[in-house]
Amino acid sequence: MINWKEIDTVLLDMDGTLLDLNFDNHFWKEFVPLKFAEQQGLSTTTAKQQLEPRFKSMEGKLEWYCLDYWSEVLQLDIAGLKAELSGLIAVLPHVTEFLEKLQQSSLKVLLVTNAHRDSLALKMEKTCLQPFFDGIISSHDLGLPKEHAVFWDLLQQQQPFDKQKTLLIDDNLKVLNSARLFGIVHLISVSKPDSKQPKKNVSDFPAIEDFRELMIGL
Image (tube, rainbow, N blue to C red):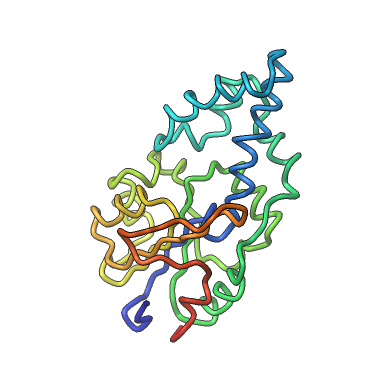
């Protein structure tokens, strides 16, 4: 799938790529509505009906990923609630082996995530993956989410990379499209970002179900 001789930089997404998206899906679809219902004196069903359009309207915007934003508008301690549920944070199968192989190579490896710094800190603490990366970049540091093609320009200014020799792995198709628009050549999707959900049918990009598929030749 990848000719590793053509790659010198690897950009890796976090949630749904390295980490099981089940944590985030359960958190936003079940746990937050439950806490919001308790706070507002609503049924969980009503809370979900109220929250779903609010969440939907922010998808693809930096606010969607911002814990401070949601803490303020929902009057809930979102970072605290994430910590409460942190037992669900898990690394996807064979990710650690893949990161170990990358670490043994001469490739530059960057974690590039839309996750808010508080969420990022919690997940690095729980998974101990931080030492595998030459750098960790949150889109909140750059002021734009990865869904914007300009994000990649800002990233390149901060962490110089050659578009022709860079591989991005991400489960978000909008992110992959924005990277393609910017000119990153090697793009791979993840077809099973959530271990509790069925495999996704991805047609626009090469897709992997687990990282063993990429370890050949690495």
